[in-house]
Image (cartoon, rainbow, N blue to C red):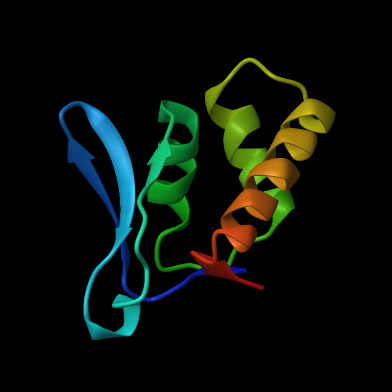
Length: 89
């Protein structure tokens, strides 16, 4: 997977927001708020190919969570990002 070009993470009023910018994202009419954990993952995969296992490894590295739980959470998050069309497989 990879974050689609034109989507950026910004901080607005203390919230981490993903929004589209540029002509390629002109039809993207919504923003997605990321919690601190999702923002941490986004910042660490920006510009890279990634998979659920990589996301899980990042979670295990930073948080007190076992790998199986991290993988389940990473898979759920990546599916939300795919459905929102901000990452591509």
